[in-house]
Image (cartoon, rainbow over all chains, first blue to last red; front, top):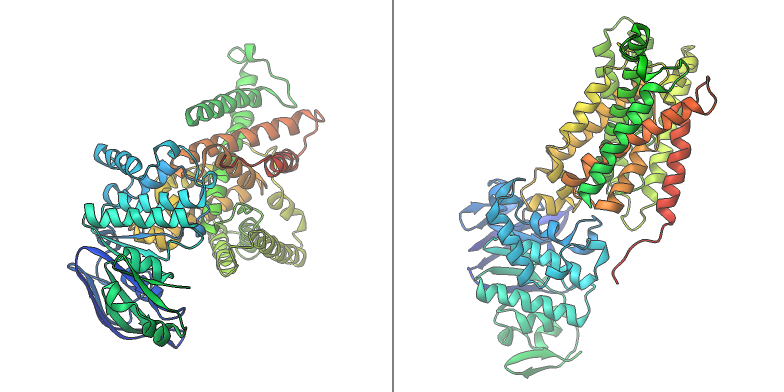
Length: 250
Length: 319
């Protein structure tokens, strides 16, 4: 379980998070949504220990963020990087292989190689495995980064707006992969999403944030409503139900 | 592909090293090597040290250039021209002026220290630059190196030492003799040591947060990388003088051929760097025999041509 207790955070004396408490039990996809500047990405980076925690406590299973070793946390929690910021010329096989780094510390054994091959097959990346990252499409690149995080073999996976710059086909296929990971591998996925419709379609639980606080929390069909859109996002948009999932008409 | 380039690099270095042993102002016949004691002396005192100096400096500069490009996350930068080279010259100049009696290891240590400060200064300076403007980094580095170079010239002028700075700011191998190049072994060792942290440096290339989330100690690896860069730059500048372009062209060449996985590419870069300096030095010896053109000049010409070719060659992209 990821347990967030009374976390407040400021950046340059600007308060970003106010006394946030949240529990994310094992299993399923939890989506953090909310307007720009609501503090979603800040909360995610605090859980990922990529920003220093100043007020409050966060723990992942038995590991206390800020106290545990990076190396230990790397075996429990994977963070999918934003591929748009990466310019390294690595082959997709090497990139996926680096997901195993916390386990082998630079000396991959047979089980690491096996995991890499299994990951490549599972993500349909085998035909591209020898290609460099700057020689594949944006969607393929994003898929490779998801594969890297998967190869890390952690029970928890964090993603910060992974659908940025992806077209609809690539977005849907990536979300479906995450769904598979949650259902088949029992991974616990925490994801920051911009698009409420993607969140409602693929997540088990939505946590809505506004101005550094949690404004709503629950199953998508309970949370997404025209009133929420008005209260939190400040926009008038009708919501209708399709296949028991709420859909925002934009 | 990697094995092929590795073998090619080894073959190039071997052939060029042999040529370097037997080409020079004093003619030398390989057949008399074992019968003529003069020939053996020439090899041991001058040609072999010179050849080793070319291999060590070329290999080390190429390796640290590659590390620098990952740390700076920019492909158009190399330590020698980006302030580190000038900082090394500044360090050795200050020691020579104020502590002329200091033992050689102390001089080297101080030069390494000023180089370290200069490199850290550069990394701090380029950190806030937007990644969307990759050309800003080399521009800032150029200005930064120019400013430190100006300080070097000013101090040298004030201290009446202008004739010295030429030997540091432009690389030359003709002065290399046994007993005068051995510091380069330290450069070679420092460059070789980066191989141990090659994986972690590669991970840094994916961004600090990705590296950290995979359990890499970002601060420590950055510090080790900068230390290796500083030691290599300081040792080369002080022993043979600044050799530009190696740290820029060779890493770009290997990245183009083999990518950025340093565990694979560092040995190839080292071999190519050694080969380029050897070739440039041999060229400098034969162009106007028996006179010599400094290796920094020939490397500059060959390197610039190679770099332009790399820049203008059609980039390979997804079909």
